Length: 448
Image (cartoon, rainbow, N blue to C red; front, side, top):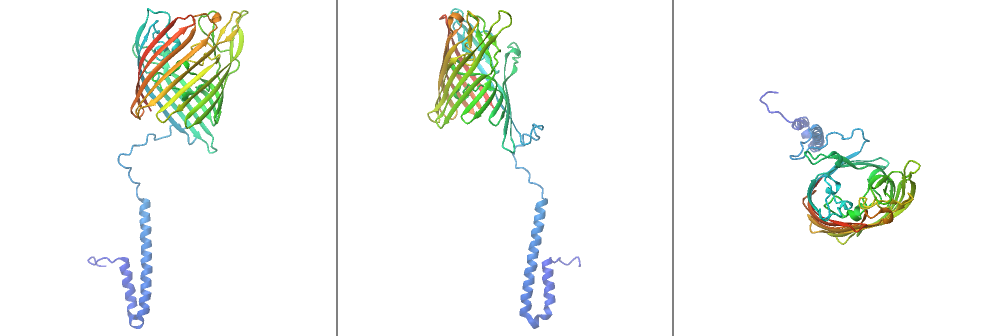
């Protein structure tokens, strides 16, 4: 082919060749040949279309992947976080940064420097009996900032395994306020769950966490609430849950004095709970059975055990999407360690050195109102009272505590909360001596 001649397409060549071959026969059988020629052209066009489709398919298969859309964030995790875990394991992390600032005024003494009562509301620590030695203190802390790690896996057979470790920084033994304000990490939760079983440390099954009021204080209605975290084995099935939990007995010596903590129980604390859930909220009932025990060595040592039983009824009632009522009432024998962060002892030693379980009753009620999607408020009252059997305990032990609090919390952005809370609290001893506390507390918290 000459360089100056235009290139012919394959279809044109085929048509020209076909026409040339069929030209001599035109005069003899023009009609039949035209029909045959038309059929051949259609077949060739069909083959050509098939070839074009194959070429297009090959180009698409070898084309590079499209570039990610502009502005798409890169993946956070490029490699497996837990390479030693079972395939399909999900790893999560979360927590919050929390700063609290508080002004506290006491009328009958001073809260000890660096004591727990300076970081959170501790009703059993309200100073009493010194009306001329009131005090005003300002404190701020980040100790209740929190970090947790979780692991979840579901096997091919449908078995679910979970694990969680949670820390805060309430380890005051390692910190001071002189220069660096460093504080040690403290274990809050550490447990493994397998389907309906849980083994490890978490909230006591005797505690209804879902009934707690929203507070600026670390706990809130401390005076009357059950508040315990401890190692346990728990089984849950529908509305029922049962647990065997770490035993510990707190004891007031005969005639009063420094509280004794005994780890001499031979059986764990037993709890059972039933929770009814509905659209209006929930109602929960629980029972606690304990062995109180105290043993000391020597010929004149103590050796006694006693069984005590306590109960709890708690819940939450939703009036509508913006208003709800939360409540609890707790009482019984040997309930001291579980109620109000141990305001009273579980038992007292009598004149013969035998244990006598102490009765106590406490509770709280709180109302929650959401003004809008960002602003909400709470008001709550909490109290507890103890039958100390003063012939054995003396008159220097706490007979009752109570407090009333109100707060406002505002969330300007998702996961960001700021709030303020005002509290008035009282504590009275068996002798009738009392003391009061007023606290204005502020909170800034960002959760992640």
